[in-house]
Length: 208
Length: 424
Image (tube, rainbow over all chains, first blue to last red; front, side, top):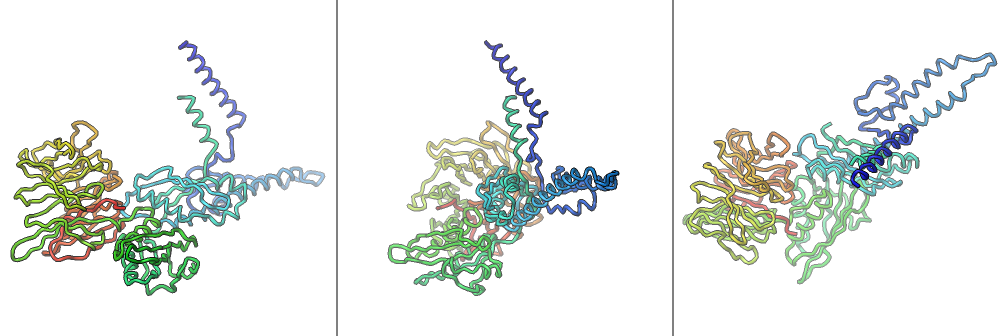
């Protein structure tokens, strides 16, 4: 009986592993949402383009912003390489694909810009509301997870990572409570809100 | 377990949130305007002054002077937000005393958040006729809590000993007063010294050391009835009482082994348990907020330093807490157990200092010459201590946000302040 149970467990585990490998291969786990843009300061998209794809120290993980820039650059270079190739009939053969690529790149960079813009609004609002306690330890960090509704009202506040100092945690919670509503949410597109701004983690880290 | 792991990993891959990082905050206190309260009685004008003093003393608020107000709205609806924005006011308080007669005092107040443009609190407080101070402290705590999210301490009390010296000698008086030093009441008068007053966790009783019999003995006194009892009858000196957070035990310093050692007394069955065993002095015990550790001063390293004993482990060696300087004594825990407050000697000054357990240095909080006997407020934000200036002894306070204050002076040498727990 004992061994039988082991067999069942082992085969179930094996099934799970194989199933997950299979699902991974067919791209089941791939999701737009899995890229987690870490934004701490204004990321000026244009400046990054000018300087080329150099690692910005503010961005810890390569985020969506980065990918978007790369796409723009590659489309541009394709343009240069391929646009002069006019074939004998006088029409540009890959015009259609070029256009769609351009559009896609434009859309994703527009999304990034939108995210950046509203993220920065939110950061400045919270920073204005936050009164940092004095005589606290250095290097305190706490994370607060908030849930917003589409009107921008914060409907749920959770301290997900405590700093260990109650005064610090409390000041952070109080800052988020004081903000209460992000009034500019009305300007955010519904899809963007659902994808990005519904659940937000706010990390208070004054040591940076 | 492995199966579980896989399931746990999947949601992490799919859901990820936007992360915003906040690196800057303001150091400025909250700016509050209090519109003069309406009401018939003469005491109404005092309410604002008392509330203002309470809030300012916390160091976390700036209260605008009354004559700086541009208008005096009578209701939240009459508030013009842009006018208050101009004065950089974060919150406006409007209130009135609605009813005052022989049976009671009733006041209402509302807090308006200028940035949010909405009312954030509306409250009614009840008081005893003529006791406008108490009512005002309730209002102060309501405002403090609503804005900072931390419990206020305006309604708490402080114990202290005053030594009056006249031609016949000294008289020692044990007082209890409001946290702002007002409304003091005598609890005990003696011709012999009274030292080390301590509150019970429910703030209904106090323990103190009295030399009235010629020896140091610890008494417990009920504040409301005045009944007092000797906690332990023996032939030795006893000092430094400190209550455990559950109120069942009292830690004491006993001198029955030839030198000072710390014992724990069970108040119900009077059983004594010895805690320290060392030929040097061990004294000034205090309990951690959860009652699992005891902090004390010991001379075992050659100079007074703070040590901690873990009560949850059997027979453990005391752990040394302070290492800076050759004098660190009279320690007590912050209410959330993040660190300790104590007296530290730097060069020739005695100052109140803070040490967080996760830091390896101390943070001095005061700068005067002779600061002693620190006592931490129940919300952990303020520390009262005794200062000696020439022959005068006074009670001073410092908040963790850096503000300092001195409680109104009485004649005599005031010393050994002890802060009560929350009374509401």
